[in-house]
Length: 298
Image: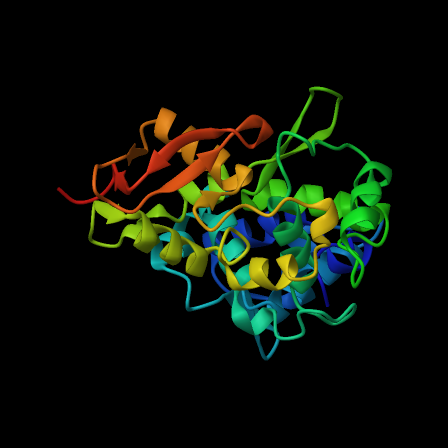
């Protein structure tokens, strides 16, 4: 079981159909669910649907109790009721990043969702202004320079799988510049959808607490446990590591966009410990001492 090898691990668009069906109709026999969501009249083979279903049962999003498939009980009632795109992506992201699905973090096979978390951690560590790639060949050239002990993407199939899942899970998107089908590293959506959990009942956090908590929720971003493990294996001769007082260009991009969208307010207060957001050519964008969430309780 893994995530990125879509021919054997399944597709997110099939998962969306399963989730919406179960949210609307409740638990359903496995055979009936497959027939309803992947009828033989509409698909050449039901094998991909079966693979997707099995994978997400193992990852804990769905349950299989004596052949009855249901949405996992641990998901909030709101998510189970609606399963809108954003809610489903949030639920999937939580399962993909879960510790229990990353126990075999460095294994090539049967690694749960570790293949995605390794790849996402590495991509988010890159300078987002230098790395905007289309095909596997371009990203492989960077891998060869930076990675000696593991490969983020062993082939084009897994690269395509990463682009699809990373876009769905909120860690990037597909652009048209400088080339069509360019993958743009951008965790804005993932960060935005994590703010409620990060802030809790607060509306304001000092930067130390904000970044520490965000890394707990999204362990593939700066300071996260998965990110730290991957960064340890990157060749420093080919990769510029941000200083402890700096925020990576990927997370800086997300926070800057959220600030401009007025979801958060980045403040630089005198006599407070600060961290620096980085822009193009690693130039400082702004210093941040406190983060205010516009959705926090007054």
